[in-house]
Length: 325
Image: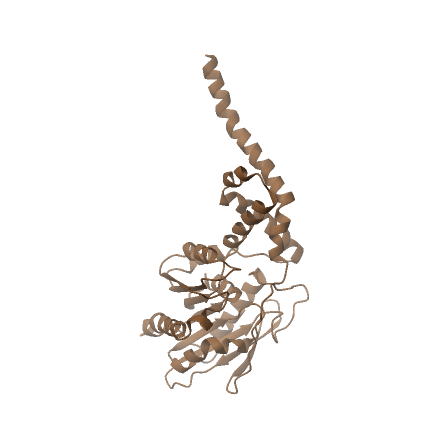
């Protein structure tokens, strides 16, 4: 009888003890370590921000954001008599709209029109005094991307079949989130794009290993637990900055059944290949992942050259142009 009572007590108290331990660890992690991890969400990266010169035949455009800001972009027409389709280009963090030319020149020659837009506080677009954009995708970035899609829908030369999306780094993530619920975007290529929690959690584990020497504890804490702490930390930082950090991984799952090619640099030391692969794993078919050997962050085009442009062009030919016939 005593053994039965002991067993019942253990069955009740062991889960309670585990819950108490996890709760205590949650507050310890939050108090001691989260501030170190969340620095990556409030500090400006050391990037060489690309700039481009306005082509003589470009069309300067402007449109309104959801809250009345004037956003500016550029529309480039293909010299080919019969247009294959329209590609919306998502700029990387801080870049001006004409920096897209190094990526899209071959697409213009292949028969595609290209549209690109500067989000708020970027390039010549209006500044939002309450917002300081950084490299992480927020709700304000996504809202501006949705305004860009709406602009394309309203053009007199709109392609009623929809458009393809081609985004770099942050621009890729923001565009995927905006397009996830809008079938007007029919396919996508992203280069250097990254999720939110698939980047946050590995950084949390890394910093925890530095600041905590109880190595047995490191193995006991699973990724979902770090993610739980990280989510609350992001809410705290977002509240302070007046933004919401969006769930890029959730949008990745919703983008299907539209085709998506994810490109990433194998030597990217900021967004490691495993982080990019986590975003790929979150997506559903049809999808493809190309890890460019030797390329650092946003350097895949420079490293892969003609193979890069060929793959991009063949993707849009197959998923945007040919699929419309």
